[in-house]
Amino acid sequence: MFFIFLFILVITTEKSSGVCRIDNVTDSQGENVKRKQYIHCQFENISSNLYTKVKPFYDYYKSDTIEWLEISDTDNRLLSSGALGPLPVMDLRIHNANIHEIEPNAFSGIDKYLGKLSLKNNKLSSIKDYYFKHLFLIYLDLSFNNITSISENSFLENRYLGTLILKNNLLSVLPPNLFPRSNHWRITHLDVSFNKLVTLDSKIFHNLWSLVELRINDNYLNHLDENIFSENDDLNYLFINNNRFRGFHNLTLPKSMNTVNASNNLIAFFNLRKHTFINTLDLSSNGISSTKDLSFTNATVSELLLDNNNLESTHDTFITYFPSLWHLSLTNNKLTQINHFKNSTKLTRLNLAKNNLCTNDLLNLPSSLNELLVSFNNLTEIAFDSLQGLKFLKILHLEHNQIQKIALGAFRNLGQLIELDLSNNKISVLGIGVFGGLNSLKHLDLSENELQQISNAFYNLRALRIINLSKTKVKYNTVETILLQLPNVEQVGLAENGWACSHLINITTKFGKKVIDMGKYNITNVDGVACDYEETPEHNKQKSTNLSRFEADYHGLFKFQICFMC
Image 1 (tube, rainbow, N blue to C red):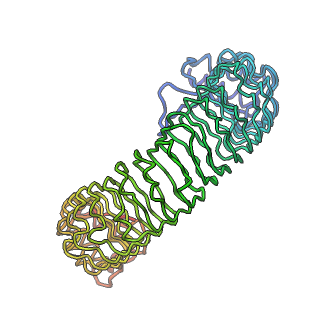
Image 2: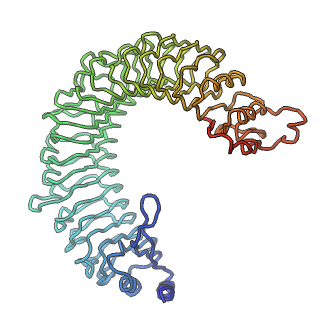
């Protein structure tokens, strides 16, 4: 009986070349949510006939199991009055319906139910003051239209509105009295990003006392009044990135904020009027060449992002502005030196990648670090004292430098280090005991070095689980010796070392390892790892085939794995 009922409903809608059906609500993993459905009408004109097609679904299903009504992919230039009839719709989504205009009382009949309304991806060019009259909306999405103007009374009766989304339109200005004091506004999330705003009235947000998240990013703004956020005490997330701001002088912010994203502007100076705690401050991609004008005397910052600027150094007192700083990112600048970083006692994560730092700069780092990224710099060696004070370090990335030499004892104080990346350097010799002190090391990447003398360098790495020796020209006998020294290793990268296939098979059989390559492929390979074919009677049978079945013969006998780390 259930299937017959649905069949009749679908047949009815097909008469107008549209289909209304029940779809399951899915969660973020794509799994169906139990007892939650929505009605989806596709290619269906929004007219009086729509009510007769949708109403049976509400009659058949319990109303609390229908999450929303979605109407999409149709051509309704005009949303006419009463087109939806008295449907018990609490959440209405009309997407990609070519709506240019909305008649007065278009939502009559559903106005006493409707709480959420989405009209994104339509062709609205303006918002009239009667569009949403008599509605008690808590959520309104007008994104991806062609809106150039909004009547200042457009949302006057929507006093319960919590989320208003106006992003991706053509707005160049917002009416100064769009949110009058006469309404006790409850808006917590306001998104006006990706428009053409060039200016904002100094009091435009003053009556939005509940505002938590504001997005005015990706516009053409070049100035903000210093008091524009002075009444927004609950503001926690502020996105002003991708505008044309040149700086902020005496800007007033709430006492505490989670995120201030001011990246991709032209900011040269930044100072606040009152003290503010900011968890994450993003000033990336601003062309900043000096830190002297970035006054943080009235800010407590935990995470500071200064990536993709033009900094050549940091001034002597820069780090003293941040007594609570735990993460500092300075990647992709022009740093040739770092000053007085040792004074930062709470800094645990430091990203200095893609700069021009030398080996001696490692001596200026704070002992509190847990994670240090100095890849893509000009380091030529790791000296005996380079890392001596970093006893809490757990992650160290030194890849893509010019490192040729590692001094014996350079890692002696890094007993907590778990991950070490030395790939893409110029290391050819690893002396006996060079990794001494790395008692906790689990992941070691030496790929893309031309290693020549290394066989006795690993005997004390008992905790090691992953070692990458890809593109190192390492020899089979050397790897055999290394694996005998490292009984706990589970994964080994061996790609593109020009080995004979028989040697890879020997690794598989002798050590019970599985060899996997995610890099380049030749016709002949062992479990995907490209190898050089050997012309012997035994191997002629296997020519131009994948030799992975050798691993299968031994798969049940061994518990470890070797895999390629790209």
